[in-house]
Image (cartoon, rainbow, N blue to C red):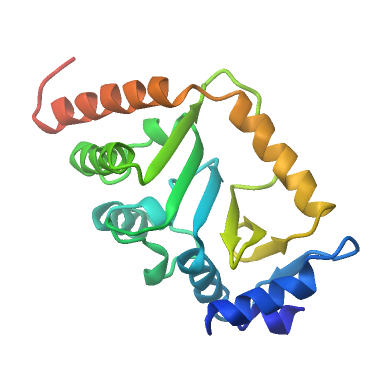
Length: 218
C-alpha cells in the first residue's frame, strides 16, 4: 500500500488505483515519512477536487501567500512538510473548506502588513467562492488531539484523510478509520462560528492589522 501511495504524483488513474486498494473495511493507516513525503502530499492536494482542512497551529500552506510562507521560513517555524507545489494558485479550481483555530489570527507572522495581506487573500477567496472558512472560538475545547493539521480530500472520487505533523503524514481511508476522522471533523466544525460570523471576524482582524501597519494606535 505504501508503494502505491508513493505513486500519487503520476496520474489520477494511478491515484484511483491506489485508493481502490486502500478503501477496504480492514485497511490499516499508511504512514509516509520517507524522503519526498511532502511532494507526494502536494500531488494529492493538487489532484483533489475538494479539500476540507482542520488547522490548529498554522494556516495551511495551500492557503498561504508567498510573503506569509517566507515569514514562517524566516522564523524557523515552517513545518518540514513545506513544498512549493503545496501553495495553490489564486485561480485554482480546488475548492477548500477550512475550520481553523482562533489563535491563527492572533499570531502576527511576518508583521501587520503581511497578516493584512494574508487576510485579504482569504477574504478574496471567500468572495470568489473558492474558500469556505469557519473559525473555532477561543473558548472552545473542540480540537482534534495530536493532529496540527488534518485534511479530507476527494481524489479520483475517493475520500482520503491525511493527518499531518511536522515530519510525516498518515493516510487513512475506508469506512472504519476514515469514518472516525470524519466524525472528528464534524465535531470541531459544529463548534465553530458560522461562515458569515467568520467573515466578519476576518474583516475585523484585517482592519486591525492594516491600522497597525499604518502606525495607527487602537
